[in-house]
Image (cartoon, rainbow, N blue to C red; front, side, top):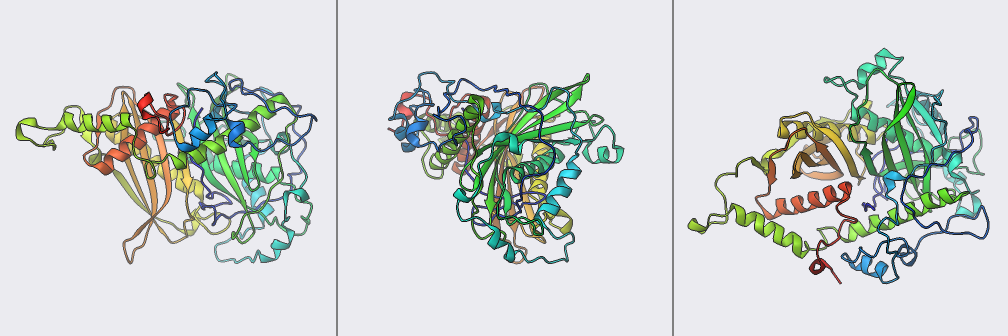
Length: 525
């Protein structure tokens, strides 16, 4: 099971990168398109124990720390105080008891169904749903929409996973002009462009989930739905996307809290007259009021089948894991004994005992100092980069960060890198139009032919040269041949090294949760 951070941020064609108290975007009634075809449930996760219910349509209940302990394996014994509290309630002995988020998906369409709507249609529908300004100079007052917001979830009807399910096509096969925006100089598909589309689509799924009885047909939605976190995107082994074939994206809301929503999206491309999955993505979204000044309640999610209950329960586990990651951060908890020893041995391997010096004057063979792996970029945020609420589009920031991270891996390895995992894209605050967006990417950990890249996005004040962090991105790239070792020189870089190592072990399955110990002496209790 993979643990990740909780964040509240914003996004895309209608959301921007916002933290919990600054989110923005619109929400609306359920889309009025025809109902999806009959549901065929495919659950690819491990055998997570489904919460039983005396009634077939009972709303999935909230999961407490005690109930989480029933689905976590006994091997989770080395961790934070929060994990100690969880384990004390008793755990399942089977380490596969909880499903990883990347393996959860309620697949509705038939194997060869092709959606009729395109991603351009989704963007157009979103714009009309929220009543957003269509030009940068146009100003729209949304304060009158506050009266449409429900005061509690009791006012909102329950929704199912089928209600939010939808799919769309990125028509690369039929639209040559669109294809030019997606094709790479190496003949592949730009993953950064795909991230923008996934960001838009995740917001759209949340809009489909929300059904507000107070909504009137003559007014736009009072909701502002924004991206808080891109929880996990895993690319299949040997994956490749062709720029001359259509891409299908489909998904649904998989978990809902009071104002937060988790969505799971599948990305497929047609190969030999059949849709082949390339990746799945997990997005965490947040609903805000029309003025982006407070949270807004969303419809509760009910589970109709055992498979849906497993999907929902895994979302509850995910939420608690993100809280655990925050508590186990290296900013709050010192490295465990194994990590302390690792850093010490690393520095001693570079020391010069004859000179009684702990500093190496020359980098070891087939290695590079971490400080020399950096790649930077500065972008002026123009109005063309805005979302529907005049903040910088979160998908645009993701695209720029991904492409800088790819370039960083390319220049470091001197080989064409392939992305294997994208984890923990955390949106901390919105980026205003006119900002100077400063991106800093570096290789923080390497293992064999794989590189863990950390990219930070910050807003730079031109007058004071001060920098405020807005986003953090974690990418795992792989090359064909082994790459040089990235070595830290300072304690600051050593913490980046350990943090990168933890994230790498999480996405590769070597670590079950962020603060997990590696030997018994690492246990924090």
